[in-house]
Image (cartoon, protein in one colour):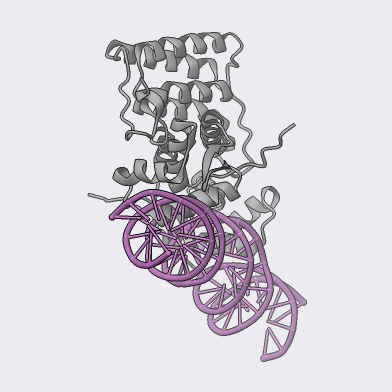
Length: 146
Length: 146
DNA sequence: CTTATTCGTTTACACTTGTAATCTAATCTC
DNA sequence: GAGATTAGATTACAAGTGTAAACGAATAAG
């Protein structure tokens, strides 16, 4: 079994990861060229970031002639998931709904996305509690204020 | 008009902010006592964090006798919002739906939360596009892979 | 072959974050 | 009033980040 030991990807590193995720397998050159436009980074910046991602085990490198091919050790899906779940841990459970509501408001969703979300929610409704319990540490949220 | 200049709250700092948000107005002593259980922090750690939050303008302090009263300069709602929107900026627009779906899956929602979300989504459905355009920088997502 | 280019590695440096110890001035306590 | 307690300010220090320059080895180019 793999124990992921919580790999943290910084914002700059995330840019690199997106390129890798999109390509499956890349050379540093490809990353540099891809980001040339979007980010105003020097080549060596990108090399540093790639190096750090390899250290962190977020990227795997295999020799390919005189250079390396990089590929992701962590899936985009998992990485996004753990990043986004993070927010739920930062608010009172009672506010989970509000967080999602804000996200729905700001996001761009297709008809199909929406339909699926509605189905998912209808399904979740079946076992939903009338009220969500606040599980905050005392004093860290105002639910308990009588 | 206020230009918020993007205040960033670190994870540790967030713990402090939650206490402040819950109380409106607190002394450092109250923060220390409140977090005593939850976090294994020394008093001076908390003082440092409070100090940094004041520097960052996330907290406001007003003299109160020989000490200070602290209160939040930024609302919890706004802070949560900007944190959660961040996630949308890290994935292809086409994946907004997937992010929300994951969040719905993981979150704890009341019947009312769910009903309201469904209403919100039904409303959003009216003007929803059939397909969400990918707006990623070329090479940073695989939507364009023919 | 010699030179220019390219790749990966090493080093750099300031800023942020987590986590405190210490110091100093004010203030309760006896 | 003298000592104990407290609040806030100053200093510390390692790890993580953003951003890169420089270096050395390999290789492509002429």
